[in-house]
Image 1 (cartoon, rainbow, N blue to C red):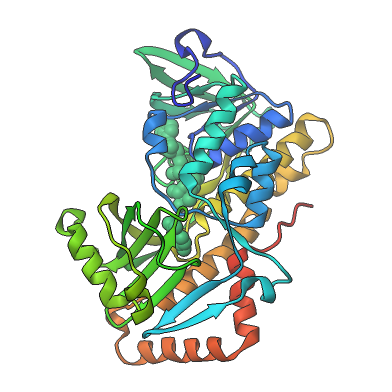
Image 2 (image 1 turned 45 degrees about the vertical axis):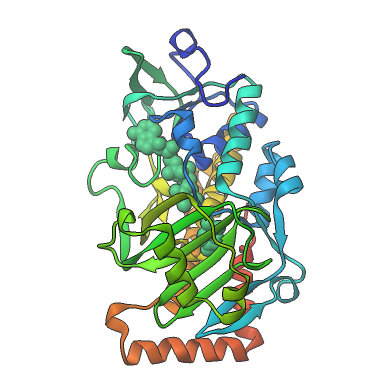
Length: 412
Ligand code: APR
Ligand code: PHB
C-alpha cells in the first residue's frame, strides 16, 4: 500500500463528491479523515506528489485540542506512543534561563512534541488504509461556481488535469486547504475578502540534524546577536533555528557556520551540552502574520494556511489548521445529518475568534524575543521591561502558558 501515490486515479477519479478538499497538507488530510469518520464523502486534490508533501519540515508542537482532533480522526496512536509530552518551556534571555512551568500554570496542561511530518504521515497512512482518494500531482487546479449569495446555491466544481486527462468534480462544498500560495483564496472575487498582513524584517534559518537535543525542553533564546530556538523531533533528532537577515541565502550557511553562530547565542550550559553534526535539512523561512476575513465565500470554506499565517515563534500554524478543520468538519456533519446549518453559518466567526488570539500571541512572542533592526533604543527597553515583568509575575507567566498550550475550543 503506497501512502504517497493516488489510488489508480486514472480510473478512480469521480465526477461528483460531497466535499472537494483542495490541498493534502495537515489541514486537508485531517479534514478528510474527520469527514470520513462522519460518513461524508470527500476527495482531496493535491498539486504536489505525496513524497514532496512528506518532505516538508515544519514545527511539531501539538496542543491538546489538536491531539484530540487527531484521536477523533483515528490517527493519534503513534503521536501518543512516540510524541514527547512537555510540561515546560525555557526562555533564555541574555544568557539567563527562565523556565515557564506550563503544567503548573495551566492546571496540568502540556504540549506534545511530535513533528508535523509525522502527523502528515499518520494521516496519509490512515487515508490509504481506508482506500480514500487523494489525487496527487493534479495540474492546473481551478475552482468554479462557488455560489456566494445565490439562493439556488449553484453547484461548485473543481477542474484539473492528471496524467494529461482533464477532470471535473462537482460537489456541494469546497474546502480550501491549499495553503498561503493556493488557488482557493485567490479565486474569490476581489473585494469579497479583507486581508491583514504584517511582514517581519527577518527570517528563520532552520537546521535538522540527527543529534541529541541540547535540553529536554525547548529553549527560546533572546541574545544580542538575535533569536535562536533549540527544539527537537525526538531524543535523537534535533531542530535548531537562528534569526537571520532576509537577504541571506541558505547556501551562505555552512553547517559549521550555523553551529558557530548558534553557540554565540546560547548560554554556557547549553554550549557545553550542544552536540553538533551534519545537517539533514537546512532552510530559511520568512516570518509573517496574515489573516483573511471572512474564511468563507459561498460554498468555499478556507482553512489552515489558506486563511492565515502566523510567525512560527508560538508554534501555532499546525494547531490553528487543526482547529479550523475541527470546526468545519463538525459544521458539515451537522449539515449532512440534517441537524442545522448554524455551524456552517458561524464557521468563519468561530474560527477567526481563535485565529486572532493565536495571531496576537505569536506576534507578541515574536516581538518579545527577536532583535528588530529599527528597535534600537526605546524598542529594546520595551522588550527588556516586558521580559523583566514576565519573569517577575505569575500572572504574566500564566498568560504565556495558557496561550502556549492552546486556548480551549469553543465548539457551540
Ligand atoms: N492545487 C492543489 N493543491 C495545492 C494548490 C493548488 N492550486 N496550492 C497549494 N496546494 C497544496 C500544497 O502543495 C500543500 O500540500 O496545498 C497544501 C497546503 O498545505 P500547507 O501549506 O501545509 O497548509 P495547511 O495544510 O494549512 O497546514 C498548515 O503547515 O505550512 C505549515 O506552518 C504551517 O504548520 C502549518 C501547517
Ligand atoms: C520546531 O520544532 O520546528 C518548532 C518548535 C517550536 C516553535 C517553532 C518551531 O515555536
